[in-house]
Length: 279
Image (cartoon, rainbow, N blue to C red; front, side, top):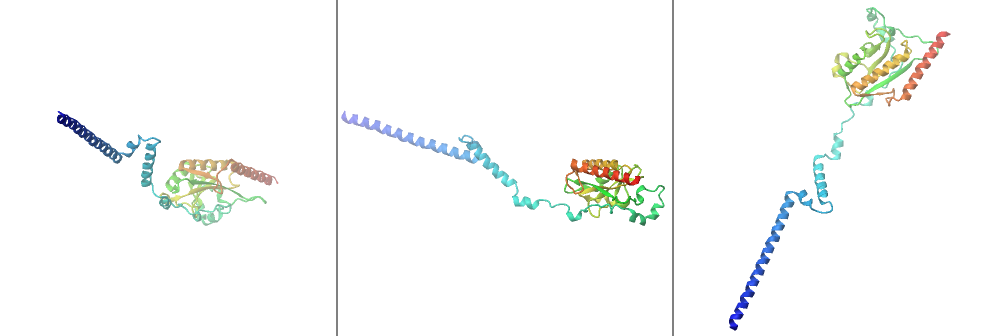
């Protein structure tokens, strides 16, 4: 009986040892399964796995991925600077300005006397204006500058200037006359901002220019203030239609003070002319 009891106790202990050993092996398999699954999740989708992390883990990973994508898709700063377009026009290519003397048509008109003989009605500006003593001509200038670095297209310029009742004429400029037919005193003229300032009417389609110069020397038109207002309104219309800006004679922003000063100059010139005529 003693021997049988010892054998039973040994059998129970052996069975218990076997069960404990099997449970340990099962625990190891479960742990390994969890570790493999976790590693697989990391490889498949980092963002989905890290979305369960505390302290903004998902946001940090997303930011890192975004940086990687943007670094691949965005060129280096040096490359961007290298690819930046150069200015389309050099300052040396632009006309420096127009003086009252440059608008004097008498020299050119003298060379075209044979053309004047063919005109049924002489133009009011074909004769040099004789000013009273002590009064000098004054030039008024407005610039219309393109916003696009490529400048204005010649055909677009031609269409808008013709629509504004300007006509191509003397000195290869466009002119606005008192009459829509191109007769009468010139109210103002328009030059090409590119040197030498003229237009090739037969090749307007090939023209690219950074801007236009609106100008007039006073005295000239009977109503100088009206002529100036016509020039200003036309410059605004051209700028609006061609996507440009109206600037003053120094190519700075056109301010209310600048316009008031211009009108004051015209009024002062009118007063001096009237006073001279009464003497």
